[in-house]
Amino acid sequence: MFISNAYAATAPATDFTSFLPLIVIFLLFFFMIIRPQMKQAKEQRNMIAALQKGDEVVTSGGIVGKVTKVTDAFITLEIAANTEITVQKHAIQSALPKGTIKSI
Image 1 (cartoon, rainbow, N blue to C red):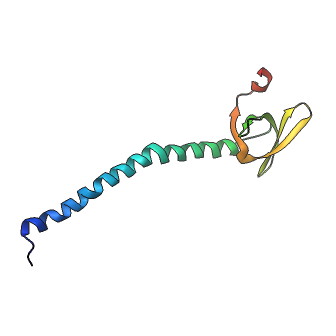
Image 2: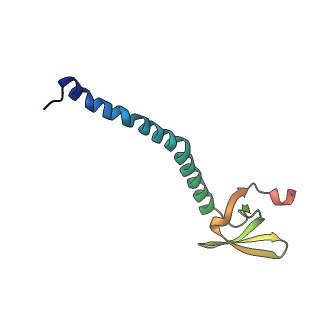
Image 3: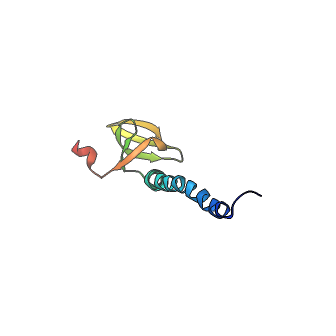
């Protein structure tokens, strides 16, 4: 009853302007942190799904090897002559160009 017409007319505008910095911070956070991580995770999933026998890879533990067998959840790597290990697919960090192992 005692609220002036001028104050009542500007109240909704101040509500929006008080949330504007939060919206801007969220958008910056999304485009600078969340979106690039989602893109990198998608590339990692595609790389793991495309692995096949003969590919050269590096595990997250730093082991370099050649893929000799691929199953649904595991990959067998040849890390030296007649030495093979089995690792989970998510342990593969990156794929190397062919011939990298010979040059090491």
